[in-house]
Amino acid sequence: MKGQKTYWVRPRGTQLVIGGRRLDANAPPVEAHIPCCYPAGFQIVALFFPTEGCWEVTAKSGDSELQFVTQVKRQTQAARWTAGQSITRIGIDMSAASASWSSAWLAVRSLLWTILLPGFFAGYVPWRFFGLGRGRLEWLNPTSLLGLIGIGLGVVLLAACIVEFARSGRGTLSPVDPPRHLVIRGLYKYVRNPMYLSVTTIVLGEVLLTHSQALAFYWAIWFGGANLFVMGYEEPTLRRRFGRSYEEYTKQVGRWVPRFPFNNTHG
Image (cartoon, rainbow, N blue to C red; front, side):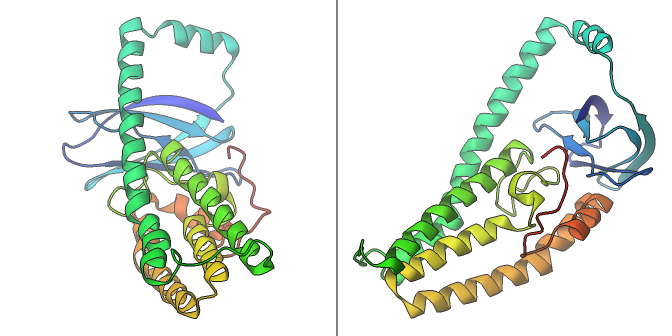
């Protein structure tokens, strides 16, 4: 992946969204790391190009839009050294402090939304209303063991999704605090909604553990609502924010069924 630091001036009070596609060959979309908390219109952005070639970059901020075409070439080691020497020590220190504070605050937000959203739907509700807290674990029962495996697997997959949202998306799982740019790495290389599938794995594991038909019915209602939310709100919102990059992503990766042949060189 080729990285390039760029400088932008955006209207005050607006959010900067940047995407890009390769014009001369098929390639995953441009990844833009847009840090938060810049007080004025000035904004530093790191653009990561998956491959060399001719790239079209599109930036949107409020009602303003900028589009340009650039040729990306491999940077020599000497050029990297010269560019690195031009950065002053005070700039490095300020960037490191800002990045550290931003990462810590992002971790707090991610933990909070994890408790409020999947923690509520897959934890509190089954425990409080569907007998998960009153169930007895039968170690010799294959169904119970399969349920435990499902719960554990779902928790691990969910954690991986949340970390990827924070690491490469610089956002959380909440619709009111979403990633700042399109996440197509990790599990998102194979399926567009691994987070909902992780919660599904957890709840179905709880169904096997409790033998509760009511909990299975609850999952069916929840999953139906999640599907309507994805199709009615999330996907249109992502199309507006990321444009062609998201359209290309949807053509290569399924909504619910994983497509393992998807090739993402920077995942």
